[in-house]
Image (cartoon, rainbow, N blue to C red):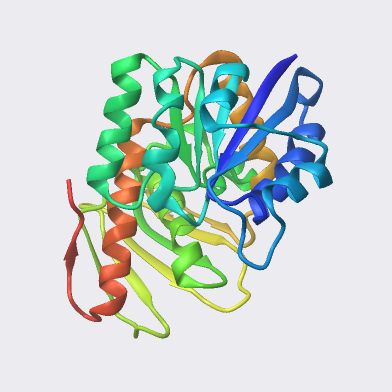
Length: 283
């Protein structure tokens, strides 16, 4: 049985709280054990690292290094603390063991490039992705139409706060259109942003709206279209993809995709604060 170690900024957060269940319920659950956990700090007002480990029956590592040395595969969590990903992943990326970085690779493109360079230098299998790369309804799109080259119009919708969740729509955009995002513009307001993405020959919109589901409407150049009104099962499917990566060492997405998500995420926040102005996506 392969031992998974989870490294976090603080452990009492939604993803870490659900990884034990998601892993156990996966088709590969009997092949893996969430063995150890380590966090840089305790969550203010939440569970301490010791309390979290006791609650979930997971060993508390004495150090980040001890966790990496003992475990077979590593999760760098901190899904909403991407500023910590570079330092939290540094030792793991020297290990040669498969490393998954949760949600977004890094907080900025330079940091993302350094993470990728570290993985390449030590030959460490690594990928980073939001769970929305793996929604169930993606299977309803014919494989020949998943390259992004045939998409003329893509309208994406998602809920909750822009700060935390716009990355999911960006992940969906890159999954469907490839790493071709050139620039972004907010045609809404700072409080109610609606982003336009220039992807060359594809026109894309991204809207954050209250309690709306993640959804996609796709128009193809041949006149056909596809409407996905509710993108579902992304956490179980993302967990399955992560465990398959831990088994094979083969990433479900490219470094180019992950770096594009980082750069577009940065541009999206700048666009939100500067309505009706094109913000270039850094390369």
